[in-house]
Image (cartoon, rainbow over all chains, first blue to last red; front, top):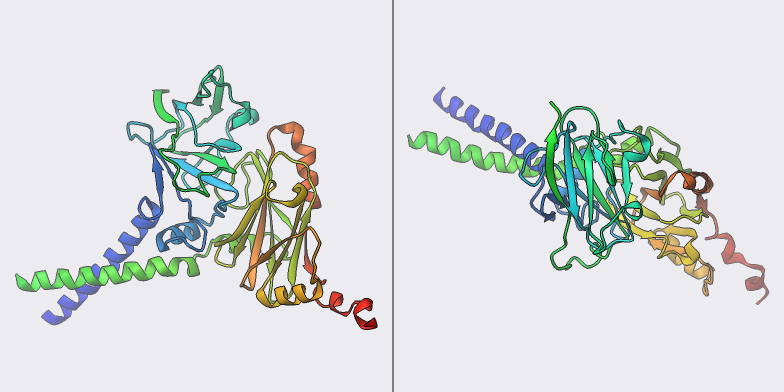
Amino acid sequence: MRQFFVLFFVVLIGLAGGGALSWVSIQNNHGFGALTVGRWTAWPLAGSRDADPYTRAKVAADGEVPLGAAEGLAFHALTDEAGRALRRQCQYRLSGQTPPARYWTLAAHGLTGAVLGDGPVDASRLISHKMLRSSDGRFSLEVGPRLAGGNWLAVRGQGEYQLILRLYDSPITSTRGIVDPEMPRIELLGCAA
Amino acid sequence: MSRIFYTLTVGAVLAGIVHIVIVLLVPSYAAKDAWATLASSGEPWSFSVVAQPGSTETGLPLVDPSFGVAACRFDLSKAAVSVTADGQLPFWSVAIFDRQGRNIYSFNDRTAIERRLNMLVMNPVQMAQYRKANPDAGDRAVIVRADMAEGFVLIRALQPDDSWGPALQRFMGGAKCEPYDGLTTASVKPSAQGE
């Protein structure tokens, strides 16, 4: 009887622990193969044949088709500079610059990957060549529900979301040794009640 | 006391094994992977639209809303695949994926010849036939060797603003994804028979 209980607990710990560990590590894959710059994370090898098992599991579980090396690289941000989750009712300022790329785009997605398109059509996505920049090439833009002058990405509604900045045709995917790639800082400006 | 320690240790080892097995098996058993989604939305050997620019209704998750995306499933064990499209757009890219959604090859408009999309995907056997049939292949296709059977090709085209809408629709609507039949017919060229 005692033997039976021991066996039961061993199996229980094994299945529950192994399952939970798998779920957590697949959902929050920040380890192997991830490239983190500030609050932004990208998976340069996602989808490639050289991807590690964790990245491959995440890609398959999300059902996405990652960008190939000659296409570009997607950086995801889920938190602001202070580590708080991004929320749709809050206004953020992104400032700085991006690694070199022919084009880049910025868009808001739900945590499961759906495109958020609650704002005006023209303001629900941003493209690099339309950005207003300062004379040194840096830019500043606002993300959130409040209309902003200059560069503005409209995000409306409630709940957490993620920002995805995608670099297209960027040397960062072919030469992974770019020294200190710089990504925009994400600062919280304020939240609607 | 040592009994509890023993139980926990064996349990932890078992948890590690279960974890490794799950992570390795997820790509094979994911029910909603890209292939399954594409298979439910379009026929093979033709492009079906995955996402229109600006739309929130996308066939696959995590698609850039600034892009139009179309996908075509093929099977190299049945025939080599020829992908063509003609569009003067600021940026487009093509990627080939295998059945498990792994990226085999990708290129963009700047890598392509004359910025036209003209690509042949072949397995090694078809590649050998093609080389034999076209010894001095002067054609302008990008030739991709892929050692696999089922797969899909994805084209993405940037729409910088609404004025590019018609050009983008021409590119996506005119994109063709067909079985390539130049492997066997070309090998019995009339000139070859005359020698």
